[in-house]
Image 1 (spheres, one colour):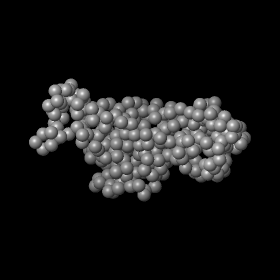
Image 2: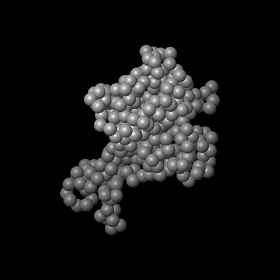
Image 3: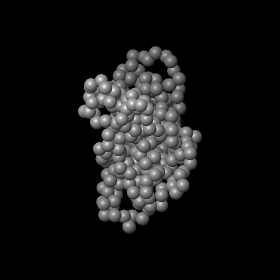
Image 4: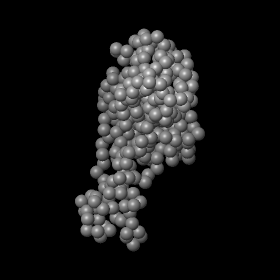
Length: 328
């Protein structure tokens, strides 16, 4: 994962509940330990500042809900080393901005970059300062669109009332990730890159795990590791219903993706469940395209069942649940 973004030292942005009481109905921004402007006698952080703090830190369980390709947003945030996606803005591209691309990681863990030609790269795998990744990314994107060409965008705490990605991106536009073998997309002309960027590029390429997005099903990504390969598939179904369906298939011996493959568990990421299969080393992404499509059909049938789980299916579900972890 990318390094933590540097935090700015500005005073906190306030929510609607933390502004009001002056002649114009608004509180001035004060430090956390200063007296609250409402006149209560308490420190700001213990009075109206609590609402501002809550607005900033409250965790949004599904930050990408409502965006096209929610599963792929999660995969690019948590699973895929190197990928880009062309983004379409609701209001179109501003003058002087030829394109906006989402990128898994940017050099030196920059939150965003405005290139010399005016195009924008928005980094997805950076740590964020609030509990709403969507709002943090939207704030970074807006600042990148207004930045001077040739400059990275620094991290900061997003305003609690600022827009979210859902407010800025066209919901009807396709979200089509392009997975790359390395991070050469960072610099159009790597021969003229700075020594710092070149070193960052070399380190990133050395750490990248070969990854391929399956073409026949949504949000499923094959990856290659030294010991075995894996398929990790972000699924949009309600968690309890999905675990029941997976248990039905597992108990029936039909949860695999072919000979030597095995459903080993799942994890939660940004509100969705991600089943994981172990694959033999020789099994490629192309090898699991057809088995994955066939599994999707079996899963749809299992999801449609309302029958109570059998004892064997309950045991299978317990095993899957015990091996489940949460990434976010």
